[in-house]
Structure formats: C-alpha cells, structure tokens
Amino acid sequence: MHAKERAIAPPFRRVIGAEVVVAPQLDTDELGTFSGEVPRPDALVETSLLKAEMVFRTLDVDCGMANEGSYGPIDRLPLNPAGVEIMAFIDRKRGIRLIETLVTHRTIWRLMRFKAGDPDRLLALKGMGFPQYGVFVGCNSDMSAPVKGLETVGEVISAMDREARRSDDGKAVLYSDMRAHRNPMRMKVLRALSWKLAWRLATLCPKCQAPGFGSIGSRRGLPCESCGDPTHYVHFEIDGCSACGHAAARPRKDGRRTAPKLSCRACK
Ligand SMILES: [Zn+2]
Ligand SMILES: [Zn+2]
Image 1: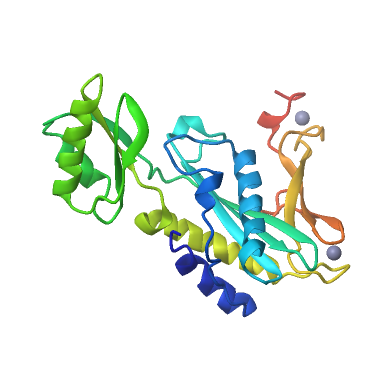
Image 2 (image 1 turned 90 degrees about the horizontal axis):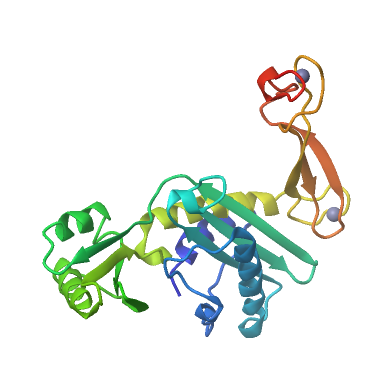
C-alpha cells in the first residue's frame, strides 16, 4: 500500500535476478499501523513474518516478504537507535524463514504540540521536511482519528487549528508520517536493508545449498587482553541456515582477538 516495492525491487532484480511484485488485495493495516506508539522489536519480527505469510493468500508464489519499521524518540528504543527496519522473507517450498534488520541512528520521527494560531507552527512544519516528508495532525485529547492526506501548508495549518480547538487542552499534535511513500529517509533505509537481504539470499548454505545462509547471532566472551578471562565483548559471529539448521562460528569482522582490560571484570 505504501510503494515499498520502489526500494525493494531493484536490489532483488540485480543481485538474484528475482522479480518483486506487490501482493494485491491485502490490507496489512489489520496487523497494526504507525500511530506514534513504539512497539517492541520482537513484536515487529512477529508481525513482519505474519505479513509475509499473508502474501500466499492472494498470490500463487513460493516466496513472500514483508517489512515492518519502528521509529520513535531516542530514549524509547533499546540500544538507542532512532529507528529499526525489519524485513521478513519466507520461501515456503524450501522451508526458509529469514529476518534481516537495519538500525538507523538518524532521528526522523518528531512529535510536537501547538495551540491554535501559534506562530511557531510554520517553522516546525518546515523543520519536519514538509511537504517532501508527510505529516499527520491529531487532537491532543483524542488521538483516535489523526488527519491524514494533508498536501499543502494551508491544509496542515487549518487542520492544526481545527484539532486544537476540539482538544480539551486546546492543543493539536503535529507528527511525522512514517509511511514509506511519504518519508524519503525511510525509503532510503528500506533500500539499504533490501540490498542486505538480497545479498544474504545470494549466499548458499555450505551444507544443503539452500539460499540465505547468514548471521543468526553472536557469542560473547572475547578474552581479556591482560588475563584472558571472558568479557562481554562478542567473541564469534554465528552464521546459520534456516532450511537445515547448519550453523558455523566466524571470527569478528574487525579482526579483534582480545578485549580491552577496561572491559574485564577481573582486571578493572
Ligand atoms: Zn542448510
Ligand atoms: Zn582481565
């Protein structure tokens, strides 16, 4: 519904020669939408896998994929990213279920409150990148029905004043529209994540040759440079195959073999 294929299709075509088509007649909004709330990352994984399964309801294909993203104020997400994009890929013929994620540290989600006629409204709107970036307007005492589809500055300003007057505290809420087709930054992150997923699918399992061999986690315990005790630093990256379960440890990408003394409990 949000033109994500513009970001996803080119990497899939170039890397694995796969054609990406949009599943028709799917209203994934039944699984939840962006409303200013920030869901937990594991809930996002669940939702994106459910969405990918929905593809098979309307298309006779072997593979389906779907995306979920979450953006919010910096202190409300773990590890302090400004946002995270999750892509789920399912190959039902080969029994492959993959999740790729990409964390972005750029804050692109904003929410502000204004009284009717507030002179700062225009500057705030400009700061949010409007009209290149979309915005929603809500009523501060009743956020159940935000105003969408706003295209001109005049439309946004009059919606803000209308919602402010309707609110118990006289304030309207102005916040970022995070739907991909109204958010160029999100589209960019989605494109980067699509390259990552396509490259992963081009990597075959060394044991069963199924596509999608790649990172499934890491093991901590990199030895301390001074005493050799295990630390909380990552020791090995783990690659795995979703089809046969084969897994293999791989040394850290940065070539690091020991952890700094300062990270060691025994030496500190
Ligand atoms: Zn395998
Ligand atoms: Zn030590």
